[in-house]
Length: 306
Image 1: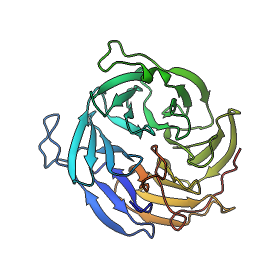
Image 2 (image 1 turned 45 degrees about the vertical axis):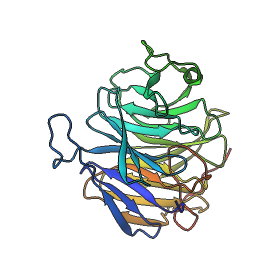
Image 3 (image 1 turned 90 degrees about the horizontal axis):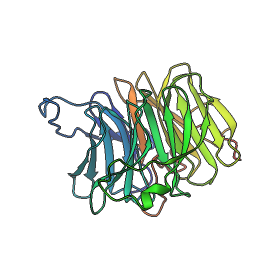
């Protein structure tokens, strides 16, 4: 891992790995045979995220499955089940013991990926409002953020995972801390800063990127990222860069030290809407699920820090 690789997933079934200068150097198309589809028929990838040490990449697909890939061995290592609809959001816990998944039905599950593999906790029960983004706090292991189609960003306390036995029925539930309603359109993603303990960011179909102080429970900045609906979001581990993707397949990277909303670089990475983004992280560079990037990579837009 060199802290410079961005993974993006698309509705065309591909996962693309990109360098900071915008160059594409690899495209992953896992062979998937599920729901009656043959391996030659791609299943749309709706979410991707790196493990904290960047050895593993998790992808969530329209077939309700979460796939874990070992990038060192170049193999499909694990499949996580439990969701009943497309997996729209994913995040590793800082310890790499758990992966949170969010679905098109609005359900957020926490899966154990070490030892006895199983769903162990539920943050949000299925209510019909799709949850498009989910992210563990890198500083508070029990705190989970989720963003949904109604434009709401929810904060959850997931302390229950510490005592939840694998396979428990019914699954224990997390505790809702707060709901933010700053967007006028459906949220596409949510991510924590890996530098500022309080800073949280979300993006939505209204074309806005909103920054929150999770301690004061307040909005601290709003950025307009073009007129096209945003469909994906990633926060770099260095705390200086944000990547967003839109409905036209365009990926933008912003440098948060800039005083303008002009991206550092842009690239048309997909012919279909960008469904997921994740920056690669160096080992020891912090865990979580938004992504990482070196200062040589990202783009324009300083977020006010609480």
